[in-house]
Amino acid sequence: MIGEVLVECAHMTCAYNSTVAIKNIDLTIRKGDFVGIVGPSGSGKTTLLKAILGSITPVEGHITKKPHLRMGYVPQVESVDWNFPVTVLEVVVMTRSSTGRLPRVTKDERADALLVLERLGLGGLENRHIRELSGGQQQRVFVARALFHRPEFLVLDEPTSGVDVRTRHEVLHLLADLHDEGVSIILSTHDLNGLAAHLPRLVCLNSEIIADGSPVDVLTPEILEQTFGAPMEVLVHGGMPVVVDGVGADIAERMSRLA
Amino acid sequence: MIHVIAGITTPFRYQFFNNGIIVATIAGALCGLLGVFVVLRGMSYIGHGLSHAVFGGAAASAVMNINYFVGAGVWGVASGVIIGRIARRRLIGADAAIGVVTTASFALGLALLNRYGQAKKSIEAVLFGSVLGVKTIDIVAVSAVAILSVVIIVALYRAFLFATFDPEVAQVSGVRVAWIEALLMGLLSLTILVTMRVIGTLLISALLVIPASIARMLTNSFARMLWISPIIGGVSAFVGMYLSYFLDTSASATIILSGTLMFIVVYAVTGIRGRTRISGLHHI
Ligand SMILES: Nc1ncnc2c1ncn2[C@@H]1O[C@H](COP(=O)(O)OP(=O)(O)OP(=O)(O)O)[C@@H](O)[C@H]1O
Ligand SMILES: [Mg+2]
Image (cartoon, rainbow over all chains, first blue to last red; front, side, top):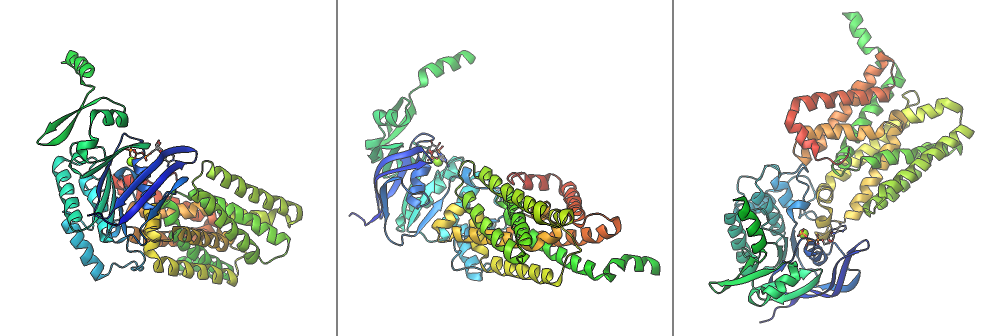
């Protein structure tokens, strides 16, 4: 079964002033997709997600979206102004700016927001300032904000950076639940084994799309070397690819001298 | 005792003082309110630039015998919107461009006053403000802008909050960020326009920054900042204005100094907590 097209990029190139960040992107996201984007730092993951979101316009090629597509965006934590004076609840209800105008959070909104927070394990934290949370909790506040908008398409920029194994599992379960409920998802990640390898579809990005397919097809030493510019080995464990650092030898040798 | 009370209330016997302290207090509260956005978005240089641009308009309208509010108003709002546009593009050199344009406007105003104005007195009044020239029209103007600002900020509260905190996501969530920013710049220009005669060109940007920074040290909530900051702005303007009568100092300087004193006290009292809260504010 092939779902309707939500987002389609054709020969898309995006740039900041004169520096090209991503080029020649051909990518189609359909309803029901659950896509991971992997690539080294600076490879353009955030840029691609922002182009999909619509906050960056391509300088070449184009991007088309299903009309009135309701999207939720979870920014990379590094891009949030953690010093801004807002509480968790204020962040969550923020996206309903067009309906709720007045400062007061209505009873219904509050109840809705508390449900979402509860679901994300943030119950009881609604009046905390966003800085007074752990890294994993901070991340989930923005997931809560995105969900409050009831999106059909969820865009997450590194949703598991800086969180522990347990929180990562929780985030994965949550995303899988949402996907089961019919939400289409695209996310970026640096975590090849903990996150990317579990997804049905991966896009390897290094300015251009190097590969696009299932983890088994995409997580190969050749593609990984081409994407990350560093040698890597791939083992298979329980039917799933596991990526291991191939650089090992010389670093191991230097470290062993220290031991 | 009676002497003391009589002494304390002396200044209020003068109509010019009453007018001046009313305008100053409302102006302080208004600057406190809009200062919240100025401080949280790290755009204090815009307040600075705008006041210098409005100065050019004020001088030009004085020389050409046009009503101050009309002349400086058109000039100020226009430059506000242009400055907002330049700043929004976040191009490299945006602050430099704003600096050049507004300083040029300032220099032009100064030259006009030198050449055609009634000499030093009026220049000093525009630079440092003056309570003497305050008329009923000033009270009406500053009240009108204050009411307008409160109404707009309350009515569009969430859009303002969202656009200030996270403009990119706000934009894609349906907030018309460009509109909100233009509105904010318009209100800022109007504020500078109606407060400039009392506070003066040079010290207005301080009044936009100090109360909001104090409020930021006192609270972690945007909504609370929006009422704490105007109160602090209003109180420091009232106190500064009142003290200036006895100290025989410039009203605007005394207002800024009383605000600064409050800043120091709050900085000391809130300690580490207050310091970390304002540490994240961008170059104020
Ligand atoms: N605002 C900006 N102005 C100029 N260049 C930028 C800007 N944002 C990103 N870039 C450049 O665009 C390229 C892609 O950046 P992007 O943030 O998309 O990478 P990324 O894959 O998300 O990296 P990371 O994994 O570190 O988050 C980089 O070379 C970066 O330097
Ligand atoms: Mg990124």
